[in-house]
Structures are given as C-alpha cells and as structure tokens.
Image (cartoon, rainbow, N blue to C red; front, side):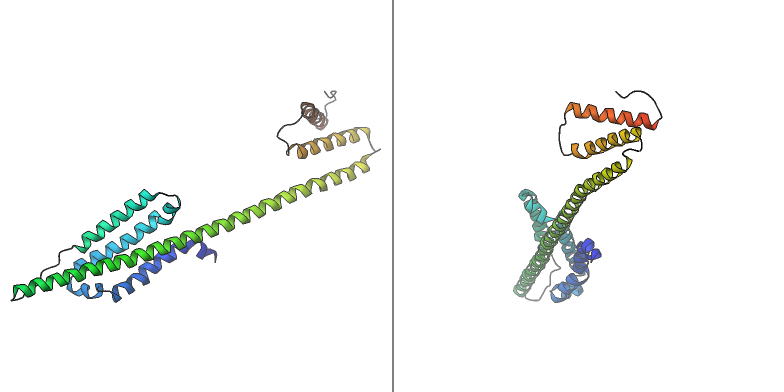
Length: 236
C-alpha cells in the first residue's frame, strides 16, 4: 500500500506506455499505417507519447488550480500546433491511369489520415488530462490525511506535555516531603530546584514574563550551580 501511494504516478505512466498506447495503435488506423507508411507512423506514435508526457510533466491540473491559464493555453497551443502539422504530413501519392481517380483517392486518403491523427490525439489527451486530474486529487487526499495525522500527533504530544509537568511536580512534592528535616541545605536547594522547574514549565505559555520572576530564576540557577561546584559564596 505504501509503495502504491508513493509510486502511483509511475503506475499510471507505465499503464499508458505498455497497455493503453499499444491497444490504441492496434485498434486505430495506425496499425495499418505501420506497413504502408512506417516513417509517418513512428513519428505519430512518438509525438503522441511526447504529448502525454508534456501534460504529465507540466501537471496541468496544478496549473489550473493555481489559475495559470496563460501557461495552460500556451502548452495546449503548442500541442495542437504540433498535431496539426502532423495531420498535414504529405504521404507518398498514389497514381492511377485516370487523373480524376488519382486526385479523388489521394484526397480521401489524406482526409482519413488527418481524421485518424486528430482522433488518436484526442484520445491520448483525454487520457492524459483525466489521469493527471485523478493523480492530483489522489495527492491532495494523501496530503490531507498526512496533515491530519501530523495534527493528531501534535495534539497528542501537547496532551503529554500537559500531563508530564503535573506528574513531575507531584513527584517533586513527594520527594520534598522526604527531604524535610534531613538537612537545611538540601531542603533549601531542593526548594530552589522546584521553583526553577516550575518557572521553566509555566513561562513557556507566556510571551512576556515579569522582570522580578526572571531575576529570581537567575538567582536560583546561580545558587544551584554554586552548590554543585562546592562554592561557599553567598547567593545574590
């Protein structure tokens, strides 16, 4: 499932290259053109593949969502112009004894050629645009689910952060009750440590703090550091 989620675009492109286009060639006049006009047919197939990947690479649905209509119009104009030139490709003329029959046959053949080219172009563009919109919608749904998952994780982390301080403060109070009476120095240091921890947790919810609270926090920190370093100086 995770592989399909990450590679859905490649799956769509592989389906087009290996299944959709071969079926289109077999079911269209291009299959007959391969034996009669191979150079033209190979050029047509290459152009159709190029048309498809232009739509996929430039991500037309995203351009539409971003309202870049000029980019969409430019891309479509280039693709249509290229297909028009391909539909006007001059095939080798077929001659008959009667000039009128020669002209009629070549005109009908050229007309059928143009119709076939435009039909295949329309089918490929319809598939490319449809798959691009489906892929873009799929990506948006995946992004929405991932956003909701991250949001749920953030909310859970917030709940844990709200619970942990209560647990910490209750534990510190329990430890303080055990320290009372054992040593005045240890009791004083523990009280300073509790004040320092409480200030750290409560101040994060406020953009500003009182200057006297910040000074008291610094004084407690210095006293604890002095105690740790076995210094006997008087606290500020």
